[in-house]
Length: 351
Image 1: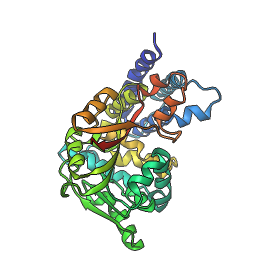
Image 2: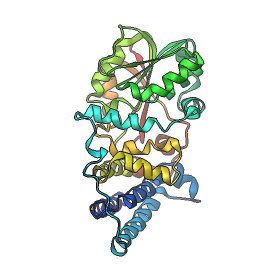
Image 3: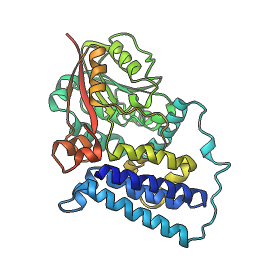
């Protein structure tokens, strides 16, 4: 039996055990076990924490241990029952777009000034080639499409952009960043808008930065059409989309079935209590966000061609990123993270 089939069998058992714990009033244990599984699905943890680690085989053994722990807990513990019948779980917006936006708005509040500035600029530099920073960011007008907390909008300004504009579905996502920019007098501006209906004229921007946004909308294609419309003919695009296949992506889908029973605010409080770093609270998007489209490499590149873009696939220099792990040839990397891990592209208008 293949490693992935073995893992998926244990994953199905893991979901059943977690759902049972939720039903018996043990949501805190569910959060803890999911945290312990999910943290080891990223390249940085198994590939640096254990000498000569084979991450795929490690994760199979790890989920087996977690399943045994869940079974023992269910047999031996009489919990206080947690009642979520009147909780925030049922107070999200009715539409999926609103619910998706609500979840991210709630997560961004954990980012402090350090995350908004230095850490975010470091992340961009690790993921973008220097020639892109030089030719498309410095001295240019940039759109951060789906800016969320505004951390990358601020970072792009710090990297030399003449003007950086962030748009997001809800003002509360970028409220702290907006105050920070006003306080510092930065040439950074924010606007509440739908990424599929941008409130800008044709050819308004030199560069569009879209980092992990379009796969959380109703239509990646509509997003690409808007990018093409607002981008200058000589402009460029950084686009990050989720890939498809692999243990990591299968687990994200399974975990969302588990967390349907637990409100986001409760999960956040448990993670805060165990001391999770602020920049890791974004783990919760994997467990809660209702709109998420996974794309194969061939499908993504066909979309780019259909919209008249030339494209160049780039590999992140950040060891936390899945495409970086695949490039390094880590054993069974594609079993863990799929064909491509993640899609990072530079797009240009076809001449």
